[in-house]
Image (cartoon, rainbow, N blue to C red):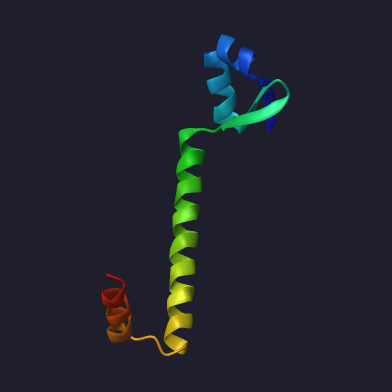
Length: 83
């Protein structure tokens, strides 16, 4: 991953965007990491992977809840009690 200062990224914005097309660009201010610039394709890949992981996790938790006796009826009752 390439690293660039916030000042240089700002002054050379078009070049910074071009760099992000080739790979993530770490942007630093006062030697502290403040952001990572990625291409739109990479961002969509990250979003897709996060969504897939959320679906996997909820499916896993659903299977666990079911194995512990949770039913749709019991869930509805628990939710009604919370209102």
